[in-house]
Length: 478
Ligand SMILES: Nc1ncnc2c1ncn2[C@@H]1O[C@H](COP(=O)(O)OP(=O)(O)O)[C@@H](O)[C@H]1O
Ligand SMILES: C[C@@](O)(CCOP(=O)(O)O)CC(=O)O
Picture (cartoon, protein in one colour):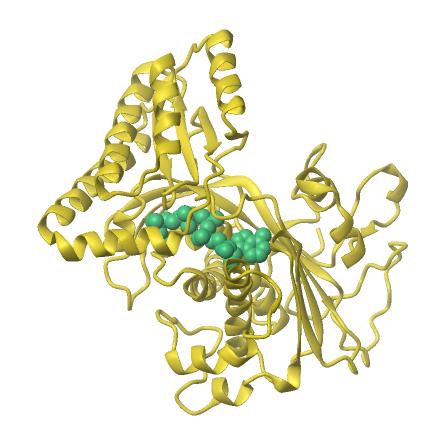
């Protein structure tokens, strides 16, 4: 199979008709391309992970997709279209604070490890964020500014004033602010897109050595963490790590100035999980701050709870990596389920549950069909239930009907999916009629795709007949 070097010399090979185009040396325009990254569930250890303890997380099959379209040379603008949050904003490239970001002592390089935001650079961005969505209510404008600040901080850190004019169009199938890592997923997409645009990544290609692939993924992950910091202040880094790397991870960051300890779980067990969204909006930043405040007020008690969560996560990691752990066997699931129940109780003690989360637990406990815990930041968002094997159809139906009646949303999702992926150029085979070449994804088509199903159908990494081969992933597994 021919290699596709994303950082090199072969871009622009496939045109609308699919016939190979001879590359014009004089045209520096990149083809439109896409990147995608998954959301995640934290199976054990949320919040404790912010305080240096271990957490177990796995990627899910819900994903964000970012389309990058270069503009002609004369168009010196950068435009964001993030329709999921109704954000549309354009900056003139030459008005952006490049000088602040490239000043001596401030300039960062693609290989740097940035573990905190620079307050002076954050201040330099502010005037470029204040004009965003001026007519939107304050809370909506804040969401817009958070997403835009993640983008701008990364653009200005990684790019330079000669950056080409571009449109960035983002759509996600991950519910926003529901504890499934939507922010990390978009941060990974933004970091990957910009690193590709400045041509600092090699691959992904199928015969790339695992070490080389790991280095690319590590670079994306480092910058995605910076994006996450812009969106919610004090992230542990577990979300962006699992969104970049995919599959499952045991994650721990004891020293924020150093990279975290990450143990990949390549064969994350196929746990029978029910994922339920309370539809109760929450703020990760607020829930994380709540635990911080509790720790300040009652340091010893809070530390003991965090320590207990750590023990639960360690126990669970040991359990699911044992050879005899069988995700279809009642006794394996019972052991793991009990740890989920304990973990949830400890999160309740930290004050991050919500009556709507407790209601899910109550309904599942009442039916006696599994073990439930909140996932992500809590305060609303999602719960996961590990289902007992052999639950009857009637019991399940009864639970599902009650959840539907009470305004909960259920998700069917697979755990342990691929991490960051690249579609370069943005051309997909979407059916027999484009057998010769492919269907070029442009901004209109992408924006007009109808809902989550429409996005998946148009650009999803898994087509109707399984994985779409044009999407490439860094293969980091040995
Ligand atoms: N599809 C999206 N489009 C634009 N911004 C998004 C999208 N998804 C998430 N975000 C950003 O991430 C924030 C949600 O992050 P967070 O509160 O951590 O929730 P989650 O648990 O989903 O990660 C949003 O307020 C927004 O700034
Ligand atoms: C609470 C926390 O552990 C997980 C937050 O996940 P989410 O943003 O709710 O998807 C915070 C973090 O790890 O950064």
